[in-house]
Amino acid sequence: MQLLLDHLTSLIVAGVLILGLQVTQSRSQHADMERVASHSVKAKTLVFGQWVENDILDIGANFGTNMYRFEDPETDADGNMTEWLFYSDSTRADGWRTRVFKRWRLVPRGKAEFVDGDYDVFRVERDSAVVDYNPDGSAPTASSLAAADWTLSYSSIETVSFFIIDLLDRTGETPLTPEGETDVYAVDYIRVRFGVVPEHHLQVQQDVNRSYHVRELYWSKTLKVRPYWVPPPSQS
Image (cartoon, rainbow, N blue to C red):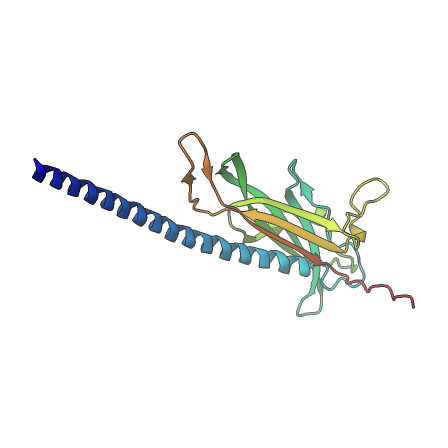
């Protein structure tokens, strides 16, 4: 009997050790997966953020003192930009001027499951159109463009959780016209904020009655747009 009890004790101890090793290995594998997914989404977020920054800094290039460089972004009920149109100019090799139209569009790409519910995720797409100036020297307008003139030139990561654009003046407020609309002529800064969740969600179940938890990364930047203003001289 004592021999049986000794073996039973050994089996229990061995079982506990094996179970502990399996749990440790599982957690280690999950941690490795989390590191890989986290690194991937961070890298893609930085690339996306750099693309956004470059586009904004190019707004109004070669415009001189022309203040009309972009439209007021269209937004949805949550404040997300749904479409935004902006411009810059360039010169061809033969010396003729061209207008470069760019637009950002927010394209739904499904849902991400958070602890407090399901939320839409998006992809931001950029379309470009390069059109020659009119023979009389006037610039072409966006309304004159046909659907075939637009070419998809960039697509972001497909799990953007929100994408918000704020048009600001020097005081950090959105300038308004007397009619209460955004005064795009008085905008000095553009602030962009967006969130991104991993493309391959690491869904860690809290318990059987709760939803999964998904981590979210945030990016925000405020950029000066052309034409660059000169601060007024200080009074001595």
